[in-house]
Amino acid sequence: MPRLILVLGDQLSHDIAALREAEPGDIIVMAEVMDEASYVRHHPQKIAFLFAAMRKFAAELRGKGLTVAYSTLDDPENSQKIGGELLRRAAEHGASEVIATEPGEWRLITILTYLPITVHQRPDDRFLSSHAEFAAWAEGRKELRMEWFYREMRRKTGLLMDGDTPEGGQWNYDHDNRKPARADLLRQGPPRFEPDAVTAEVLDLVEARFPDNFGRLRPFSYATDRKGALKVLRHFIDHSLDEFGPYQDAMLQDDPFLHHSILSPYINAGLLSPREVCEAVARAYADGKVRLNSAEGYIRQILGWREYMRGIYFLEGPDYTSRNVLGHDRDLPPLYWGGKTRMNCLAQAVGQTRDHAYAHHIQRLMITGNFALLAGCDPHQVHEWYLEVYVDAYEWVEAPNVIGMSQFADGGVVGSKPYVSSGNYINKMSDYCKHCSYKVSAKTGKDACPFNLLYWDFLARHRERFEGNPRIGRIYGTWDRMDADRRKTIRTEAADFLRTLDAGDPV
Image (tube, rainbow, N blue to C red; front, top):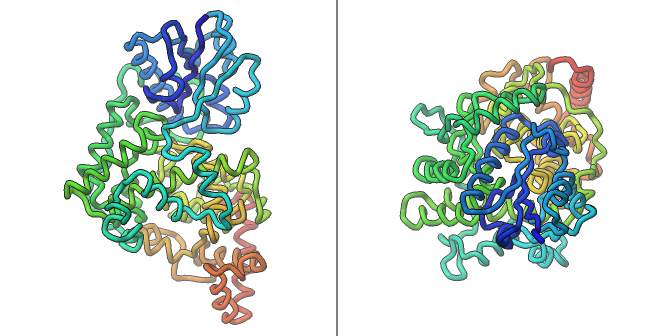
């Protein structure tokens, strides 16, 4: 009796656990289903990227002699649910057993667990830390800080290690990696890929079926197979990695990519493995092609943050995305979907997201995330927005970054302090403020940067919680030294701004 081997859209790796168990006669099940394409309103480029990559991966599997039952979105027999397609294929082929690689979302794990067919969920060992390893590391710790986990991962993998000592004698080089960037017409962005016949067909399908989703579908320039993903990796190492480190936090309004790799869509979908990317970066450093702070800074994003985020997601459990310790309940304002705003930094970050389904980590954390936190937006709405709009967003990685790191809604599981700032940080790390209707130097008044007002208003609202925080508490001394009338003006103008925001008027 044949078995079904389930391959999900973010599991496009030939050596994934479920596929390693495939035997002659087994049926590989892959499906484009509306349930997955619409449980949030995904960016059209994300849907197109995954559907095109899935179709090409299915063709590769058939080329290896495997039998693939593939459901396209417009197949009239398609049940439009992962569970439904497994049951349909089981009935067609007389199968009573499914081998699956554990999904990256509690929602899908639950669906597979309660299907009326035997489903064996194998560990997703593409990650470098298993659930058990992360839980063992976390056990008994008062604080689950990424830095300590990252050091353990360096020791485990040997990446950028000289025996038991970190390469260069330091674990990280953050102090070297906070430089603002200047415009550079010679800076090379990521490779662009013209849609081939498979991708063009998918683009037409997505255009027809998801016309109202936020985001521009065309031009579409992502690679949609492993060959293209490897080309992006090589290009990054040859042209951008060396200066990635110093400028990884910088933002320029006419340069959405700077020195970033744009590899996360391919790693998160399975077209590249995290280990091979880290090893390629480490080799580039060993060969003298790139500086240490760039190699280490990039490896930390994958070996540190990526693995840590997954660990937190599964350790904290299915209710993690509903956490809201600050009690924030403001609706996410229309500007997050392209509504008019005078704030140039938000207009740039949201516009770039609309056009490319991409923004780098500082744009997400210190522009869109910072504003949502300062304004007191509902963290679950913020979480769903990030899941919707980015091509690399999957709940296991997105939720801890948003609920924990960005919105502090988990009360400090991920971050030791809320990541909030006034306009000064944005001005330091970008050229956005030079082109803004507001004045970043103005602290109050009609032209005052809203980040300046909301920063102090946030701290005042949450003083009881944060006054004793060793990383942020001392700021209250500055607040207390302000003239009482000035403090009152800040709170009043912040309240006026938030009322305008709530009314849906441009701010």
